[in-house]
Image 1: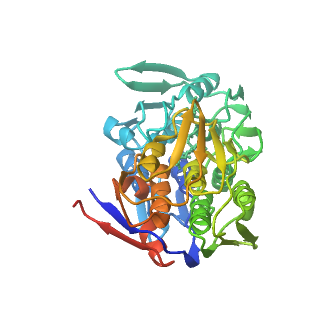
Image 2: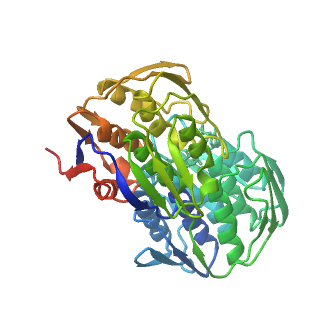
Length: 418
Ligand code: EPZ
């Protein structure tokens, strides 16, 4: 298994360009199953999760052509309506094909998805929504089967603004007879991007980005060309890396509004953040100040940036409290940070972090995507060498993160198992 070896102590300096948003690419790739037309998608980052979704689409019969970061997907020959367990175990987001296959073919069968080890992540909100739209759901032998003789528009109220459930229900509703209203929908920018992609195909969706989305159906979908929005979590990760190393970095290809919560929190921690039209300059202080933060659905502070901000707090002046309200078990990085000397106490969903002057390098393990990214940030400032195992977790959501940070002056090597 590949590892990173990081020698800490270098301040990051220079500029770094953000790629297309993983969490917009995945639902948009799933949505391309809705049409017999051609979906041309630009700014598709080369990520492990994107590779898995391409495997899923190909397994279902779609034809995919790649040219650099552009994908052309031909959905006309999709005929398989079942996702094998091994594919589903690789990535939870594989369940995003359900809405599209149910909408287009009236049937879909998937194994319970795998994905990050960040708490049990049921699909009850997805399935309840499908039932509201007129689907029958049966669950047996670890598979979920959804089928219908015809979806009908419905008024759906989500118990929780689930990103995936909102996306799956939007996709299915484009083929339901009549109007569907989704209330308490997730408001993430990736959902707006999905709406824009689907409307480009000919769908009639309004309200994405708010907590009330209306979808008229059924609509005949054709072809479209779409450029994916920049990845706000990749941008936030690079902003945190600049802040934590006391560096001076310009993060390019950013939509500043999408990272406002991170900008505000970094400024509160004493970090200089200069916001341009499509770029953000971050200058880190000699030592950040401790802050408190609570993760919330968008536009609140993103849960996908929680572990990165925790690293900043491990070496901040003072004590800060993090409360993780979105996932019930997203502190797997805490044990690894403790191995580096961090002073962190967990009480329920809260983490109390007492800043120390310096982390120390040692052997640590990436346990999920964002925890792995946080360990890279910790290694950048730790004394001596840090070895991070299982870096494939990081490759799921970042394209050669080590190369990007070496270009900013970091000392990181990717090595095969030693
Ligand atoms: C999406 O996951 C993102 N993944 C996650 O990013 C992100 O952390 C999450 O949204 C929250 O912003 C993709 O977009 C591919 P949810 P998703 O449904 O859709 C509970 C990353 O690092 N829930 O909004 O799976 C669930 O247990 C990844 O890029 C139910 O209870 O998230 C969780 O506690 C990690 N029932 C909460 O809602 C359901 O049916 C949020 O889940 C669905 C979800």
